[in-house]
Length: 419
Image (cartoon, rainbow, N blue to C red):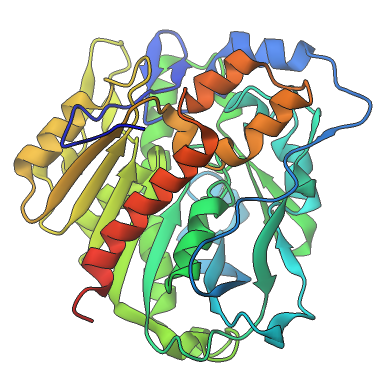
């Protein structure tokens, strides 16, 4: 595996086509009507194939605990469905736990709950429209994690740096659990955020499944799609700032598993994301000084113009940031789409900025795709070509190791060093 530092880190975007060529930060290929039609026409297998028995085990010294919380932002209406009332967001917290038997009676958290897994794998879910898996052919609910539910925080974990995580456009918050568990096993509290009506699906209290609004934009006029992409990014940054507000509430922290609220160190908070989540991490760092460092994995930071003639740089791409930031990119076909925004970002940023390209990587390399999709190829529900388009030629285990190593090392340097 070759890694190029400060190289030509570039983004493979997924095309968004609606009355012309549009794209944004690995945007949903669900917005390509032809691909959606092919997915809908594909036959389903009688017995869904398992989507991998378990995610790769985290390698840090701690076991991992997790807890899920429902948050309501009473200060704003939902930007996608204002008639539904206040903005609702689901988050999961992953944190270090003791390896001994204190949590042996607690169950392991599912990678996806059954309702979310069923939708994720359907023709309208991200499994098919973002990753090319035949609809209803994979049992996404069968995947196991390594995080136990509601166990106490590790007794030796007295101060935990905090990392927020945002997935790519249309992907659920679970779609990088491989990286999230690694960070937790190495002494971080990680908060994964579901951006409701952007994420493929979000299970809300009472069994309500909020489905993404993005697939419905297939075939919409170009200005409508452009407006939706901008709305998505604004909502993502607002969600991030709301989560930061919530973490700062002493009363809210008291409702967490024993010791966790007291252990989180809100003076040392970073953010990472893949694709649109990486754009979100950069923009949130630009807009909110509570974030001290950030990581963008293969996310361009500009808005393609509706007429397909170019793009308009975001404020973070035009102005940069003054805190540490890592740009981690792929080198597959179309990966040069991030060149303009990343170049401008680096030119205008101050402080330590790093840029790296993983040779052989594709856009999906920086997600759970390398951990879960190869098994589906072996089971015949995904083609080898579709796998290569998602994760490239880098061996899956090397892709996982490289992503983990870069992100952990960066946050260790900027959130742990000198603490």
